[in-house]
Image (spheres, rainbow, N blue to C red):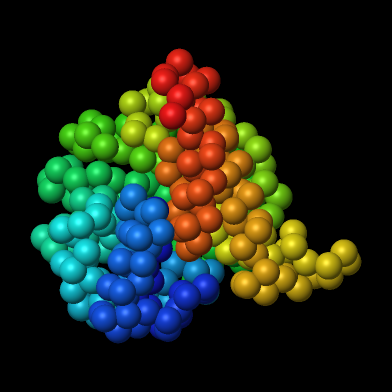
Length: 269
């Protein structure tokens, strides 16, 4: 899943694709690089981000979705029912939902739904994240939401542990380390698969910082960690990774894919 942020304030590429023309061109470049899904968002969900008026978000995402939907699967990154509905009418077939509340919209429209775990909301979620058992709590939440969606009639349900959404670096690493357990649980619950998004996030910058340095490495210095965590997620069984660096990640997926197919008894490419 390649990312197209039609926003001025997204943490990595905010402002780069603020016009419809620039966003569509970037979407096509992601398709050429190997993206299977292009995820279009009109409201940033970075830590500290403020909500965007519904009509502005619709105006940002709908023209981009209309331009791309005929050639690639398009998802919409939103928490607003009206924006989701407008995006679906424009051609989106998957709701990427960091609120994990839009399953009824997905059910009514007969599209896929991706539930992301988030503690709190973007303006406050990184203030003081706390869990007694981050793996257990995130897994239980996602399985509960998956069950609600399945009972409502959503045929395609994805779950995402929400790396960086109300989590410390230790929480993020624990969730990644225990990802195989979430994959097994999601499969048992009838989910389409587990999605993971680590691309360019702050915890990678902290891990990439010089020893003893509390300031995270810059966004451009997080590519290697982003690719490493995406590959690790694939090895752990994640079926979908949401990334900014599509070409490198698609290459990693091609390298890993035959081994996964062979291990599962399929015919290796």
